[in-house]
Image (tube, rainbow, N blue to C red):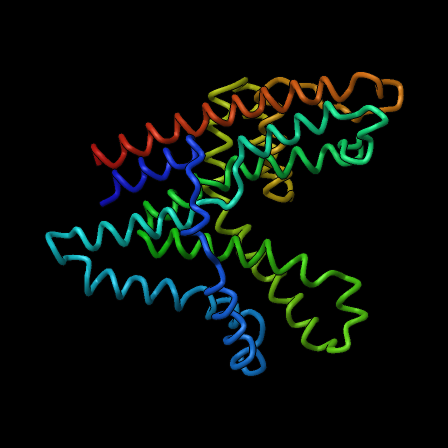
Length: 294
């Protein structure tokens, strides 16, 4: 029940299988809109986000309890596989790295508008680091602990936290004609991000530890140890660990190096991609060994 979904989900990420037809999130937005309209005024943003996320996970658990044993457990296995594949990340990490590398090379005047600027590069690097981590490992981590409902809960939380933000910006909150509703949505988004940070805390540090083992352990582990005493976002933490473990110097780019920093940055992105690919392979082997022998 656990071995094959874990292996197939890893293969889907590694070989970039298209899951767009399966990973449709319209049902989540319809459900969250209904909960927001009916219950948010009564329960508040914290209870609303919990209700939005917990009920589908509980419903899935009930379905598995009722139907999981049918046909010698095949129905339960099939439902679990579909849920795990649905819960994988929506972004293709390798394709994103390729796009960034191509954009970094497009720094001539003719393509200046599409090229990545020095000020944007750190944020791009952070998003790539989180994409590598978030596409597979946290889903499998919570799948191992809480089963398919745990994997579904994590992906719903991730979707809710990341996709509500662009809809409600600071300007839209202040300029909206329905200011109370906009403020409520902003509070829900903040609560979702905060909850996601808690759910990421342990798996992201396991990922970071393997990242250090796969690269420069002393440099990577120094970042991990420092993070225990500091407060930083998950993306910031991942980016710092990946850069340190790959032993790359990502000091702030200045105008003195504007002629060649894109080439260096593109080479670094390739190195980070190779490192994250090794991390995912190591974690797959570790998870499968854990499933088989424990």
